[in-house]
Amino acid sequence: MACLCSVCKRTLSEKVNKQSIKSFGMALCLEHQKTAKANNKPVYWCSECKNTISHGEFRYSINHFDKPLCFGCQPEEEEKVSAPPQKRGLNKGSLIEFGKKYP
Image (cartoon, rainbow, N blue to C red; front, side, top):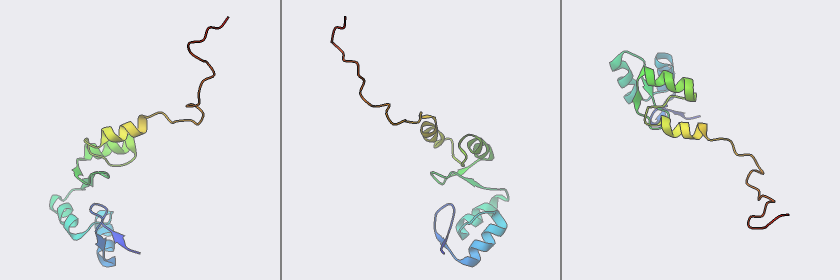
């Protein structure tokens, strides 16, 4: 089974994958491991555009959308989430005919 970087989706070797999960809690390629080590803090990425996000953005988006999203991607996701669910039959034609006079 191929292991992929959770940011850029590059294929990882089994050794790199195990070390990354042990050190960072997620599968990261060597390039993204360097970025994470340089900051010496947890690094968060938007699940849509793969840009780095702050801890505040991460916390807010996890609470509201159940996945990490940057502020730029949140409005798009909010439209998907806030759209009312469509029920079958709502778009059926009405029995009322317009323009007719009823007694």
